[in-house]
Image (tube, rainbow, N blue to C red; front, side, top):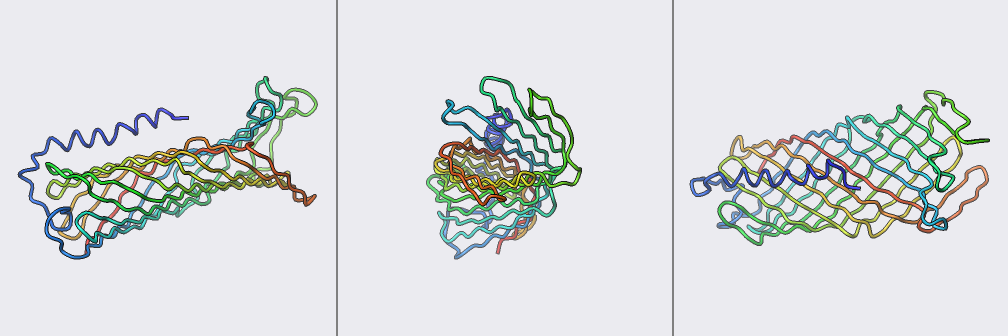
Length: 325
């Protein structure tokens, strides 16, 4: 489910690289803190503190495997206006090895939106629908740890291989809203929930060991970077609580796919202080997995195989202050 945003995003690193090759690298004077090759100068530590704006969309699905994999339910969780704070560090222990870690977390409840569609009659258009404008993104955490190894350098550009681990965890709360249900006949019942009544909370966690490539270009105080990463080892867990039905479902997912693009433009204000503007896009393709549904009033749980699905798409724009020791 690759959107037009995915296509536009894939072109961003190409634009930066075409822009960078116009610079005459032979006339550039490099600084020690950004030099990749040369005499080792001991351990170099770079710290980052940034602020970001996060938006995106997640889906959860319920399938009926015994009815040809029919999609019985789809919930769409949107997030916008989520303000993030990020802290990070990079350690360069040798001229060819960088170790990095970054953590982003939300500092406000982001604006969200949720809609829930059910198709309880295969071959027929949706039978039930609820819309929840009063939805908040209550938790957003993005963690990344990685190692980059230089394998080629030429004309001011450095090419690195990347191996890392990424965790993305988000939580939403949907309150109030309106509904159309098929109770006695097709779409015969409509109404609204109390405005502040908690309807559904949803938590999604995706883990991705990944590999990728990175390209950097250093041109005096200006530094350009682009990364492409991907994984076929995504694992995930979800918790969906329908408060008005006393129902909690737990999802467990394996062997999913992810790809991401990260581009950045940095400028050295002094030998030790700089500023960086970056854009990170991540796309997790739909993963199918198992689920367990627990009905609280009855103390009863039922397990299902290959009846659940999840996906995720996020965009993070950020500005960070950088300090090199």
